[in-house]
Length: 286
Image (cartoon, rainbow, N blue to C red; front, side):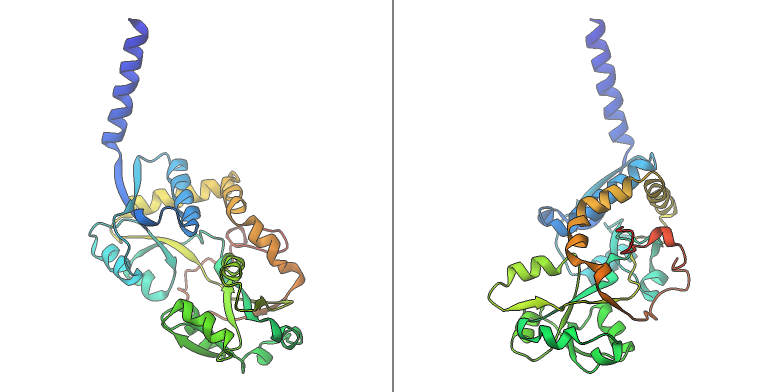
């Protein structure tokens, strides 16, 4: 009887814990939980909340929707608690950012998708002014579009993701900047387009990807930040980061590439650019 009572007591305590736990909804929809793009930010959110010792039950959102709708839902405080997205001054004015780049700024390291026949042409490029006259393509509403325009690049807007690969293949644009975590899978998914990665080049601009919460969710923001900093300090965030991105980083060979650095004038003044511990560095691999 003693063992049965202990088991019942543990069950009651566990049930009480989950009753006390606050359910928070994050922006990745339940229908896309199999998409690997969401695996890292979801795992990191769970890790951070666990490190904070807080009682939250993170659950996915119920429907897939455009990002602008998700951000508006978070801003209005109706059914959305945590969103991760590329930051901007406007977003930081409307929402509460946790100013720790969750992917260590990896989003800002861009390899160039080109036509295979143009590889020798790009091999001779080493400066921004050699690349600026060539035609790039980006989504018309992507933050990268404005960053490239600000840096005087010739960038063509597009409203259709798959159409950008066709534009490149047909020669309507010369290159398509992609993150190092996207470009390999995109090459593999377009085997008939004769595309390649431009040799020896990489673009870089600061591109923090933050968790955002509603401005009134002070405790939630503090818990996420505390947990992230704890995970950085004990190495568990590094371990998770390399588990998800280590292969992509190794395949990019960034240390062997010429880095063309661009300015990002659309960052909030409080962006922690000087905190070296928060940012990916090719020379150390994380």
